[in-house]
Image (cartoon, rainbow, N blue to C red; front, side, top):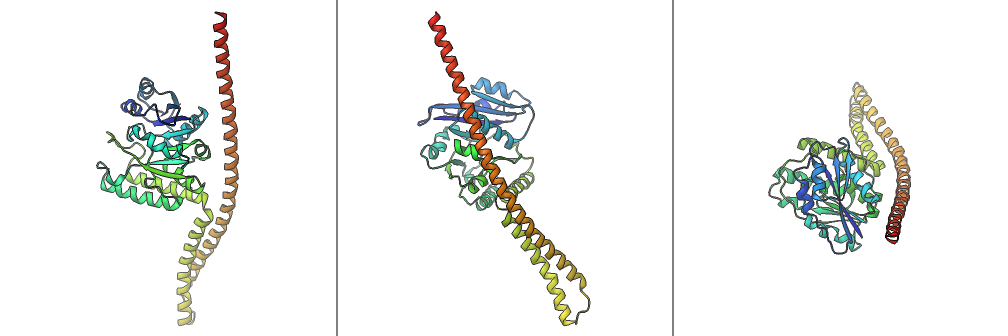
Length: 336
């Protein structure tokens, strides 16, 4: 059983050593623990500090590509390296690395495909009341959209088994947290959460410029992901709203038509008719989007099989390389 802890980083020269130091290298039920850092175009000495801290692997983005894409690159690298379990944590040492055994326990017991660390944000003293309220509201909305119960949906401290990491497809460029929860729910992954501890960080988040920026990007991600998996329902709601709005002016026109024997108010009829037509067209768009959604599911199945084949070939090549090195070493000893 091989566990790889991946750490997406952006200018974490000051924090990466402490983050790595808190990660346990021996865990019951795990044979090998390795650490992989994804450097997202850092302009400081993050890579040097990571190497000095003793990380096993480094994936480097030559330019900043964003947290979500760095996370996806990390998953691909961990899978290629033969990880059976992948843990993601932040480079600012926000999460307590000593809780990794607790985080992966449901996966080791065969109870979960994905485990999310619940920070118990309502009781974190350095979180402002506004941040706590947004965390609560956002998590509740994501839980409703995903159809699963996860207390802290934006926690970056999470674990995946190999199968879940292969099946997840990150398309967002903003953050992977909401997207993976909704995908996990819609793709019938077993998702659970466990309580974890946090450390107070010395700097603000680099993921978003401000709270409004975070809210807007999170809402866009929620709508996009839900529309990908439930397009017919989304367009049905939109179309029904438009038709409902259109019926109001049409009803107004009919009222005055009957009371005043058809005099005036033709603008109400025109507006209402336009809204109703747009609503009906929205229904048709929903049907087309639903058909596209089925095609997307077929593409996801194909992509999953391609990933498995590529990983199988990669593992075979790694095994052959190791066997060749062992044979060469044995031949060298015999010649001596």
